[in-house]
Figure (cartoon, rainbow, N blue to C red):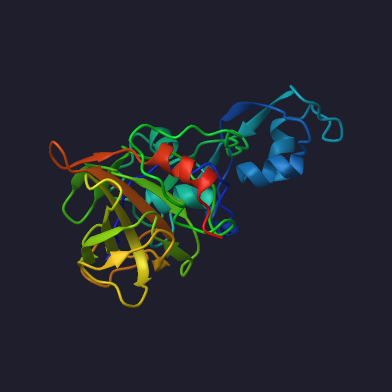
Length: 297
């Protein structure tokens, strides 16, 4: 069974290989201003457009004389859907946002993407992760903690809190209540704070997950989802320490117990407040703060 959900793709370029047979002709183009150090090869790697297609779309441009500020055209592509593809999987293959892919294909039902259909792949300019400021202010109400993944073990992440998602087995439309951080399966996950495990085990959406009430602020709850497995000795009611190993990154969830592989491996971090009633809050600024001042290793 294939599960499909919508999410905003992070800024980092995904390097998934695609079969040449999956491509058709290039189409419309969008403009891109050349940056310092750009070459056609570098731009082709970032946009997933071949150097030949870039040259054909810019016949008057000398590829040996690219300069900052020069405006070139990035051609749009066509893609033939392969077995097992979803719009989200395709967006990851091309390193583009799901939103841009959906907007480029308004006539395509994202819940009914079938093998052989030809869709538009919007052109995209090379993207870079915004630099973290040298001084990051502590967000109001955020507890002290460490980043849940070790330095160098994960990809740059973006603020995808609140993005619309769907769960295609019953067409449930819901909002993304957290931030996703891509990392390989098996990457160690650490507890951000001291706290108590209040939920543990399988969740239909979150897969193998852990929910921890923080010790510093009993009204703050942190949620770690899509784990591949847990660290030993954990369970509901167990006490954990800041920086303690609690599990490993995976891609579990979106189905009955044991379901995995419906999306790329990543750690989902949710943050909730329990007063005046249980509600989600955006953890992005807190994660940026913890990343700056609370690296585990």
